[in-house]
Length: 199
Image (cartoon, rainbow, N blue to C red; front, top):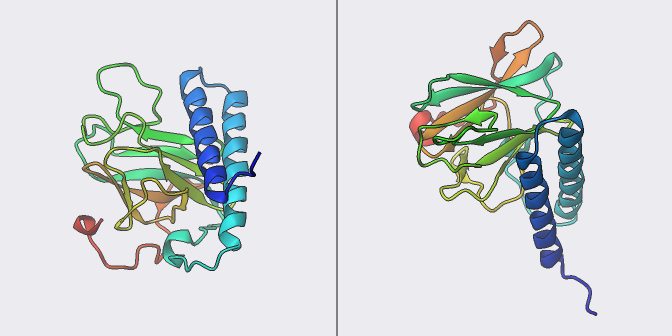
């Protein structure tokens, strides 16, 4: 039997991650299930980080810079553009946050972007990996634009505070939530000078 090629190993890991995420979405929320998903995500990301370090591919440092504000215990997603009833959503550090569109059925989504029909039912996942926030597109049809780059089909990306992300026609920004409860953007995180239309 021939050993697995690196590309096949990554593909198998992506399938395993998708299966784990699907299992997590289908069962009732409880701390043990959330911890299992976070552990699987962390192991997968550590492996991919090891692979990335072994290659000399230049990275976009602005998108991969690890935010480390001292007083941040959670974050908020702020709606910059969209038709949703809510304007912001809490993003806790202790579990992954699922973004998508519920439609008419009851939803287990953390961030429901209905009525934006160009957002997938299960569009993207955001989580805190101990150093900063990460985002991964879950194979959505239209992808997820992060700072102007579509990350669909790519590994999880570092999500800097203050950077704009577009899911369908909805534009969101991740803001730090300090202990006092005041949201703020990380200074200089979105320094390209682009407005909402530039996402």
